[in-house]
Image (cartoon, rainbow, N blue to C red):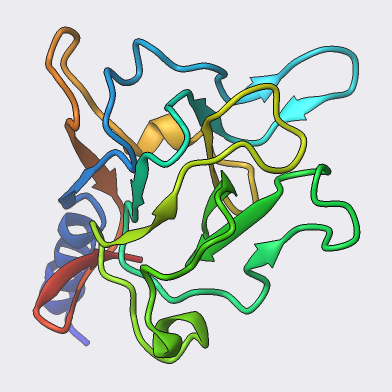
Amino acid sequence: MTKRTTAFLLLTLFSVLCNSVRADWPVPGNWPEELASDFGPRWSAYFHKGIDLAVPIHTPVRTVRNGYVRKDWGWENPDNTHQGYGFRIFIGNDMYAHLEPNTSCLTEEQLEGYAEVPAGQQIGWSGNTGRSTGPHLHFGIYPFTTNPLRIFTYSPGTPSIKSTELKGRVMKLNGKDCVL
């Protein structure tokens, strides 16, 4: 491979990695100005592994990015539904938690992980399940080392749902831009 070809490939890879894809917040609201809880350390050894978006119960929740439902969706602890994240769904690495226990917005194929859930599809409704102090959506990115706010950009004072930018490797899947 020539130096010229190598330089061209590296430049192409760099431009793909730095490309942006538009996305939306998972629930309507004036975000991030009205976050109920941010990502990061709390007290002593506790670390909040996502962001909390305070919304009324039964607010439609939509996917932020394309992905497949992971097999471990449902109650975090079926024996104690008032514990942890309550009813949650993973779409790719994105976790949506404290949902109402209803998956009627997803097809059987999507729930089994055989069909992709496109960005923007409603996946359920916000709730107050699990260890929760009030109705809200907890949104986290597994393995919970990424601040979810980093995938969103915004203009203060702009009404939501706001457009956001996702940085990463952009691939076309089924004719749509996806960030991997």
